[in-house]
Image 1 (cartoon, rainbow, N blue to C red):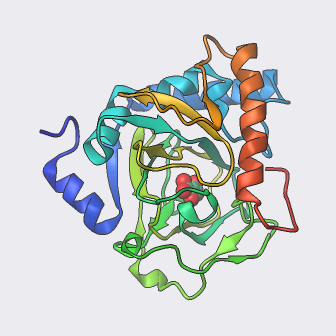
Image 2 (cartoon, helix red, strand yellow; image 1 turned 45 degrees about the vertical axis):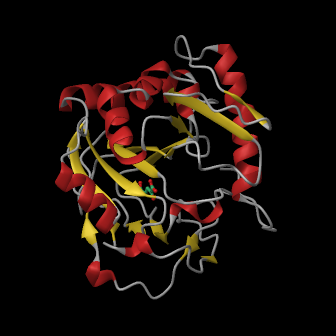
Length: 277
Ligand SMILES: O=C(O)CCC(=O)C(=O)O
């Protein structure tokens, strides 16, 4: 018996590679979190800025709470089973009227795992629609393995390597329109992208990238996992991360630094160019 998703949603996730919208928190709570992010940007500019938005859940307890939100984790259990750990998080912010975009890609491409069937909840902390640059997904594209990506390092491309899958038939795309507080969930192999934000407001999405069951292992790089539910992983090459007891907890802020250095080694493997995010 699924905990929060319907049988239809589970079927749709497996057939199409994504589902949406799912209400996680009320709209006013989501907007309050967006305001806390802006406050954190003012108070701790070294810790959170445009080039430093990976694994913020280790520095800020209000983001750690989203990682452990019951609806999010129940949905992950419905899709992946009872033993869950989180690999990383990314805060995707597109500034008002900016040119930043995300090219067609599959998340799993550079993550260095032995298998790619894992799931990413993307929680909208603002309005995410065609005007603000919502994600667009190609239904069923997750059924293929990893396809060829070309690394462009384009300045306006938010992805680490600016990697792109060429010749995607955009007419097949489904726009994931979300209100603040709603999430989508997408598979590690679904092909997706997002266009620039043409609005006067920020578009903020918190990607919990990704929840993984124990059979999925890190095969390149060290193992740094946030334990979420069920049996704890005991991968020898790394450590299980702590949860911040409060915002800017020095213990987890220090862990975040190590984790992000490891993440960069993984994501830029074999690349001559390395960007500082
Ligand atoms: O936030 C975006 O526009 C893209 C996010 C994305 O590609 C992802 O979460 O996998």
